[in-house]
Figure 1 (spheres, rainbow, N blue to C red):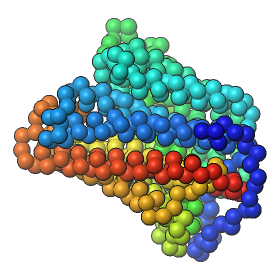
Figure 2: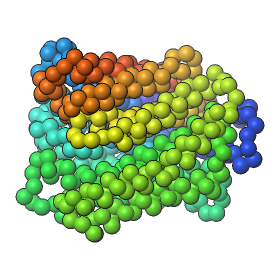
Figure 3: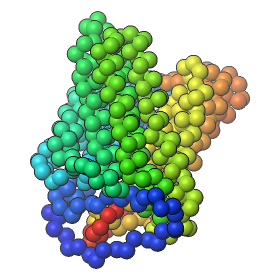
Figure 4: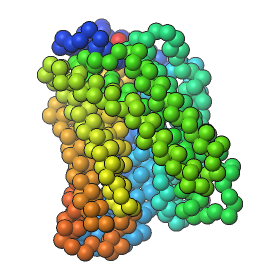
Length: 483
């Protein structure tokens, strides 16, 4: 941990030449950002540690979660209690805390070095809030409420932790807005990525505004699941734009790092990011136009996420795929990045495709969002691999580093396919054990595939943590130049 807190006046090594890139169209772009060797690097390192801690905690709870839904093994546990508590903490650590920690890393290197104290304060609050949420099950957890986007344990320890975490995110967003780079009219590759990161900050600010707005106008008679469902609905949808923008930035960055020439000009890329950002601002309109407890309010948020969120994903995804197709065979250092990128795009596409066929409330719904969320996670994992040398650490290389995204992605694909299979038989979501009412061998087989895939994914996630911690234990001189 000392290397995180040390000052960042590490000597620069000579600039490492960029890998040879296959010839491509004249309009192809090379997307990359420079990682500053100053106080921002220490802050970025610390956010990475928080993200790793969230993944470790999420993995521990996911073991209980998967076992509680796997036929045969679930009989060893008091299923209902363990399943619901594990699901709440697992989701919040693996999505909310992990994504915000990686956003904090990226926003730290994207902004100026001003107001460093605000950055450390945000990190401290987010870390304290995440720790309290993780400990809540052992401090009198309260009722587990499976609200969409941010499930909660309706007890004082968890709610206090969530509020502290939210305060940290608020400080992080405010600092990131105040220190954001000025893009101007320089439509270069790095400018497009910086705009994408800044757009994700704005989307998060809108999400925080929506959470506060919902809290202020919620009917006092509401309680339990109805209360939290409405509280988190608007802001939760806005956060999906944050995660999507971070993923798209990661796709472009990783594609260029793999030697791909993405056939998308920075001007067009910036325009696509702006289009996605513009969709976020329909969120305040939804609050002004409809009461938050109405069907119209809920439907508008859902429609904006489906339509506005996809406007940038498809063209950028196709451009990245075309760039990869024309790229030369990956060098050893590029193979983990390429594996993470391909796995991310495949899982996100699978999640989106499943979403088209959702009908009713069954386990096809978690299959859809598991695919999309895991797509974001894999993109961020690949970006961590890419950034480690620029943060002053060894880059994970070798067969294990290349296999890790494949193992994690394959396990998650089996997981969601098992859910889709079972959903076709009407198996309900957010239930476990006997509550699942598995009537046939096909239903049991589907949930068994889900459980096996989940266990494989846990191995893949654990391998990522082991590889990154191994790299963090070997500081290296920081490489100058774009990452």
